[in-house]
Length: 107
Length: 113
Image (cartoon, rainbow over all chains, first blue to last red; front, top):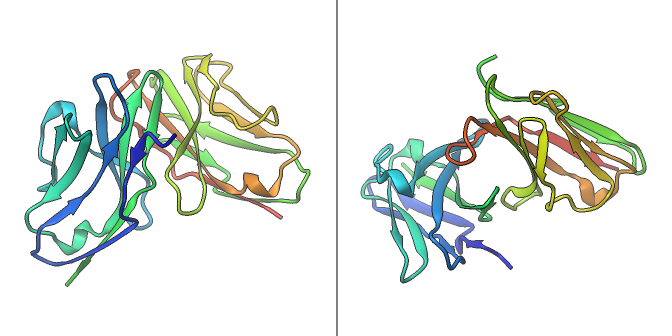
């Protein structure tokens, strides 16, 4: 069973528009959730984690236990945000990754 | 080097050949993970080491897959008698702690013909 679901494979927004990348998870315990990003020709890297409640590069993500969601949001998208984004759930010794959303920000 | 290093970056194997993929984690990182990423998919967990101990190998798809980390540093993922379905990018990641930020290598892209 898929632990992490990212329903959008592709997402395009115009520069300056708000962006939301959806992530839903399946886990009955207290989740540890992360967003990882892969820019073109770069390795996968951590963007943010829910436990630190931080904003990185203008992105935020709020854990909603009722909806089992951890959507990634940014109020004003920039061209440099174009990348592949993966939501990840950590349980035990394993990180479960979603299938990813490819974000394109149109200038 | 400062980051996780993987080699080879690209490997083409004929079906039935054995391959070995190497991961050199960041110095001092206790935990090491291997992932398999098929085209259009997210990384799928293969196995996890804490120092030299392989604590979880539940993600290895078959007994043709074997991983080791004998001295708690460099790790090798070996695939015996490769099959076409083994074609994927194999990612290695390390972290100083059991959880938290994973530091990924660039991956080894395996193509089985």
